[in-house]
Image 1 (cartoon, protein in one colour):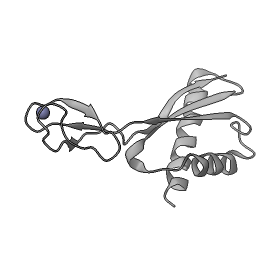
Image 2 (cartoon, helix red, strand yellow):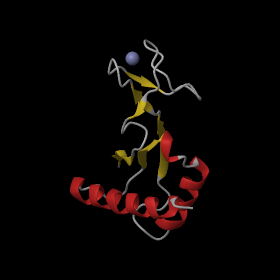
Image 3 (cartoon, rainbow, N blue to C red):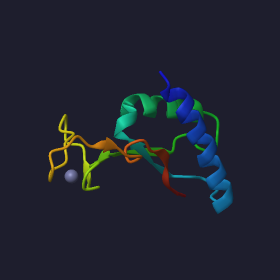
Length: 112
Ligand SMILES: [Zn+2]
């Protein structure tokens, strides 16, 4: 799946952050994963574990936080979270337009 490529990019970013912050040994890395990407947590964890072997990030605790998808109403501009298969504006009942919320794949924080 495409998780592996994305995780690889994330590891590169994590390494940059560790160097920039002067962290010698990272303990925990929190990442944000948008719900719309459809990534599987287990798969992300597995790729992370495999790809960090033998690096400064080996054995670090990876915390995956899913970011819910949000939609925007084309009429009243209300931004609302997607609830299951419900895609309509809670005010106007019009079909919402996807926003960038829910497509994240980034590092939230690293603690050393
Ligand atoms: Zn609306």
